[in-house]
Image 1 (cartoon, each protein chain N blue to C red):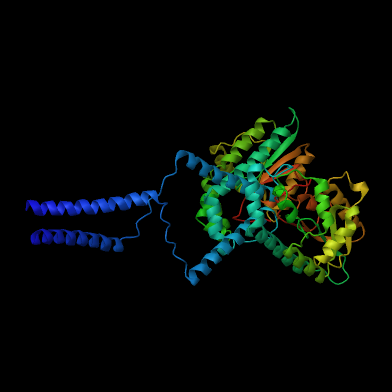
Image 2 (cartoon, rainbow over the protein chains, first blue to last red; image 1 turned 60 degrees about the vertical axis):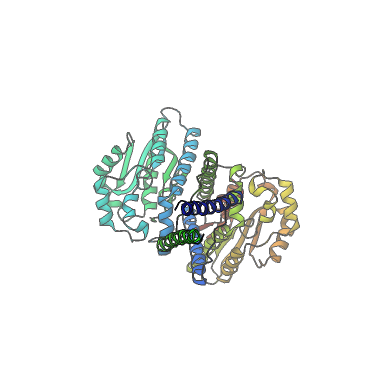
Length: 269
Length: 269
């Protein structure tokens, strides 16, 4: 029994020694390459398709930011994964931050003397406040806009601040700009909007302008241009304008400089 | 010895059985996760840095397309790899193609009746013709613009057509638009420009407008606005405008619709 055990231990020792050498040899070799499983034809086509879709959706999103797209009612269905990944990943935040930094640098350079009538216009939705919690529940722009559903969300007053916009807003105010909040929200939502803004840290704006009944049929471009024109008529000089829609920025009585915040979820004419 | 051998064989059989069972168990388990080698602090910082740089450079490029950047003289040094990868990979081509398709859809919808004075304005450099071969030799926008070097390139007359722009140009002409080529190139380069355009397949434009000596000190925005205003004064209605610079598109006498082609290499005010 003692010899049996001895033989067994010897064998074990041998096996361990062989295993050990193999381990040593492995330690000296470069890491073994993974065996890459080549995709089947079908998978390869799918992969190429996916890469093509990703490329086209990135182009679509960039074209929207450059105002190259015709008016669109919903995010193209095959671009929803791209839009979701963009909004929930670091890229959206990075884009927002960069635009705010550019606006901040400009604001500091253009800072008005005390008592000047220099104004900065801010849009609200997707500019100061984010409706991402709502759109996350509604296909990130895939679903056609539903006024009633969206109104219910607005009425919760729970839209979070966009952090880089809050910083910019405060800086612009501190620099002495008059701040005008110019929103497509209706006057019926004034109280909940004021409440939402304050709870998110926005205070002391000079004017909050909401759509009156008479503005209801106007495009955002027309409505906002009219309101900017009124500001000019009151003696204000609009030096900065921040908005996520081109209809916040274009038209007439345009700002000296405009800042287009990213928004691949919806388009307002 | 026989018993020893017997014991050894028994042990071996046991070991093999255990190994076999382990193999069976492995076959039934999901693939063993790779042991991920955690990066050292240094490597992690480097990787995070690279990802951060890529993110910031993508934001920078997008901000440029959306006209959010202050005038810039050169591509930020740390963004040159991003810009090179963008221009030499599929994304630039994809972006160009998408903008051309949007322009084409609009052109077909806006097509003028015969004998109408509807016009489409095209910029030349980075719009109809590509100077990518030149910029590839000059840091993809990293180097400050060198007029003399660039003039030498222009004078070779070898700038290739941007394929999607050539298709759009032909379609727009076929649809009955008057085509005006409005370029920042000087009149001294008229012959070589005409020659280059023709060899690349551009024909039958209605007017080629180059910078005269009197335009030399003007910004591109002013020079091009003046020229568009002259077109309007001659009775043309500018329905489309394609350019890679915002200074091709903004100012006054703006086109009914403008198409901003991508260009992360240089900025012209």
